[in-house]
Image (cartoon, rainbow, N blue to C red):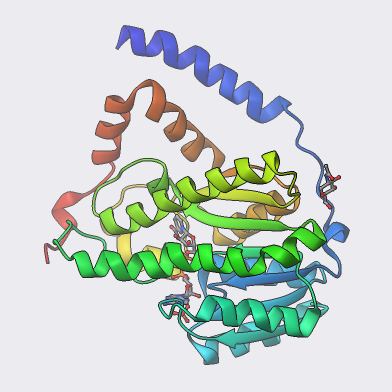
Length: 293
Ligand SMILES: NC(=O)c1ccc[n+]([C@@H]2O[C@H](COP(=O)([O-])OP(=O)(O)OC[C@H]3O[C@@H](n4cnc5c(N)ncnc54)[C@H](OP(=O)(O)O)[C@@H]3O)[C@@H](O)[C@H]2O)c1
Ligand SMILES: *[C@@H]1O[C@H](CO)[C@@H](O)[C@H](O)[C@H]1NC(C)=O
């Protein structure tokens, strides 16, 4: 413990100093006016909130998810909020041909693309791993392979516009945590693929930024429904989370940690005190409230 404190406190100080004094490049909403943006998983939660922020910033929006009725409402709201234009295309990312369909829709309507925000996830239950390999296979298609496929199809347009790719991931994609093995696997895969691709872009002078967003617990309806009875933490607000993601993407940041304190500390501890982090992760769950399926 003594050693832990000796290392932890100075590092924490350094991390704090970094957060508060490394003045980030400033963000102005006008920077986004007229930009052409695709948002996936935009029918609810963080994706829906990103669409509203982008609408206020007067961007052109193409939204996608499965549920047409919800997308219709979000598009209407975006137009009211000031979007330069807003449309949707519905379909499932479980279908390997759908990513390409979405990107072609953007190409046909706009002739180009400035930002690709990859945010959707397929359904997974929060519980002990039940040995269902088929579920992981399906989830990899939705949460990971479709991200790769959309990036591949959109890349020529993004190169042309010197645009940005935003990948929404999770603390579960940086640090193992219980009851989310399949989900966590798909999120770790995103980090591997996109961190590798970022290197290649820089080495190959491809001026397309990649922003990986590492999120903690956020108060979206689906997350609260799935885990509020089992987790001790309070969720952070989805509206602010969505704005931070949009900003980080446009500022071409490498990674976003939100909420910064929780995620920043966990990522730091992962490397300097992994066992301490693991036990504090385990103690943040009310395991007695988990109904074993
Ligand atoms: N909320 C959190 O605590 C939290 C924490 C860490 C990371 N994140 C990340 O943040 C992102 C958004 O999460 P959220 O909480 O906002 O989730 P959410 O509210 O459940 O939204 C998920 C979105 O994905 C769509 N979707 C679901 N299945 C799909 C499929 N098969 N094909 C295409 N679209 C599909 C949903 O719409 P339809 O059902 O209409 O298709 C919805 O628009 C995710 O990447 C998640 O991993 C969230
Ligand atoms: C990369 O693109 C951004 C956005 O268009 C631009 O601000 C930046 O100067 C470009 N960098 C290089 C090295 O061309």
